[in-house]
Image (spheres, rainbow, N blue to C red):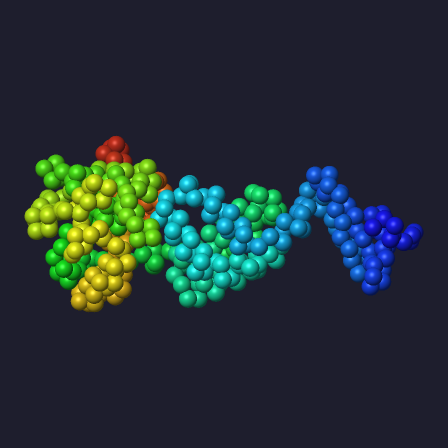
Length: 387
């Protein structure tokens, strides 16, 4: 191209006038932070000058991003992200993330160049989701998009993550539903008999679906009134396997109330375990003896039982929230609740259920009052002399 450059003393340094078949153009040349020579061609001298001045400022201030990688499609970055996380995430988490991506994120962003995705685009995406979906779904989708864009930042394709400052809807306690003991009892009467103990275990131990569906008979000790939570049942693409619990704190031993021991004993006698997954028998199974599939259970058992019990739609996970409410109502403190539910931190317990603990806080205040009064001598009686 050098022989096609035309002399023009009025051009800024780094900009050359060049001859093209369609006439003349202006070529802007610069050196990127890695010492590589770059160039772009513009139709007008003004465009070339503005570009070269702006680019030099970005290189000097450390805010320069190579425009060519920034033209990478988000869909390509997402494929790289999922490949990189394949062994780091639990199979169920990976399956859920892929589902969220294909259902919500990909239609909006997969064919967009990274350089065209800005905070306003992410915020619009979040707002449109919030109009038709629960806050939890909005958070999950936007956070997945944020992680994919973060992967682009890590690879040097973007300078900053445009999803960092997106405002998401509040996930307050209104999103969590709690059943009363009477409602749980009504549900137990509404489900087929083989699922009665399953519902009671969820409502009075707070065990998660995967922990209950994957409960091995070898983890149940009715003589000691204990159940060990050591693994979960993982279902990916229709195939079952055992996987680790959600967190290391989720590995726990739960002491069962006596009525649950009786219910489990009757359950095992009525529905003898005969399902083998990886050589292990399961406590809870479907009517044909197969492992429980969450989608089938929700459609065939849970929703009909809700209608029969006269309850509004609540998820099976609401039984875990209800278990926390029952523990609080029985006087358990937050630390004990954390251990029984398998929360990673005490803060998580307070964030989820702190609003249910006002009476416990009043009891603490009353106890402090008693300590104070016991430590401080009562004031002497005042004698009033009558004249």
